[in-house]
Image 1 (cartoon, rainbow, N blue to C red):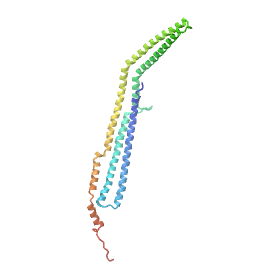
Image 2 (image 1 turned 90 degrees about the vertical axis):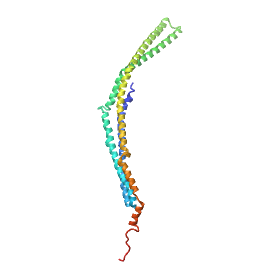
Image 3 (image 1 turned 120 degrees about the horizontal axis):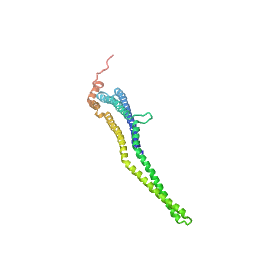
Image 4 (image 1 turned 180 degrees about the vertical axis):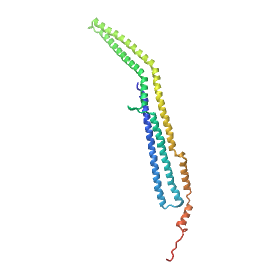
Length: 282
């Protein structure tokens, strides 16, 4: 009796798990945002350092391509953050609102309905169980009393000080206690039989409420699976065409770096190939 509480508690746990999942997604979205900001800051700082530094030519452009990659990836991670918050987070929030209804007195309507359903299904059987316990207690007390009366009678037979009248009283007590044992045993067995007869209906009623709770929980479990799959899609940049293009472009930019071309440029602009300005009479 009362062991349905774990099933009822699962409804409250379901509401809490929605909050936990929202917090989990919110934290990940915050990480995506911070990462995007840090990539942008990193790209800006290193672009300036490389442009102002001594590196030149096609290798400079290849190096700067990493900063372009970071800026584009930063944008994608901001999109991930937006999807997590605007789609996934909101979806859970709305589902939770539709699935769980708060009551004026606190708690959820769904929890109360389950609690009431189980209590109603259990009430008749619990009443019969209480009767069985009372009948068992009465029977055991009668048995104890009978044992005590027999013990007293046995001891009195060995006591010469007792007169026949006192002995008769003890014998009557034994007889009465035997009658009580039979009567209480009969009542105990009858109440047990009634309980046994009520059990199949009790199990059916309890299972009916339990199945309703299972269906409610099944909706939540299926919804969580659906949301987690959507979150996975939003996080998985490997399937985003623009993400693949970023690295294809980065590879192309690096491969266009040409040592011979850069050395030729340096020769023409900083070496023997540059226009000369030999000293002349001034």
